[in-house]
Length: 215
Image (cartoon, rainbow, N blue to C red):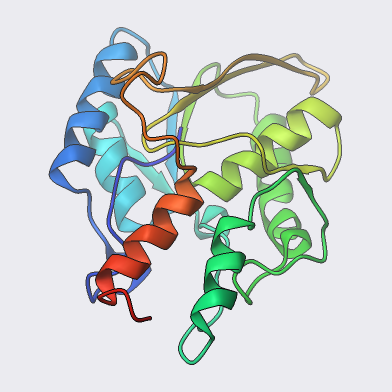
């Protein structure tokens, strides 16, 4: 699943942001949806927003931290023209994103795969678990879903990953995936209350609002 809602442009480093009140409600809804499931392992990226979400969804579980599963790293947007920032944000996850594409001037999609897929392979090779909960990030989840569906390094940007959404994957002993659910949001199951914006369009609006309309 993806971590629940946060706000990124409040002065904290993106690594340190915590859940909003709405995010805590989303995490509680996810916990209710997953109630009764026994997780053999609960793995996060170690970033505060994934840890807080995991503690809400799997209270009492031992929470693992794997920094290789952190969100894709952006570049420094200070001094970049507002129109360029808008295009970078709103177009970041459209269609099949080429591996050489930089995320907001930072890490490339290929570099994301380079650190995420070995961790996924190591997890699949571990025979000690049956059900694992991964509380991660939008781009990381897309990388995992792309691997599950195509068997390779295909980044499917069109898979929207709303806050606290749940993806359900099965995998057999040979590493073949079955995708059972993608981007299920227990707090709004059919998207009736969700804005028509993508998460990246919402991020641009948050960036614009925080800068007073003058980035």
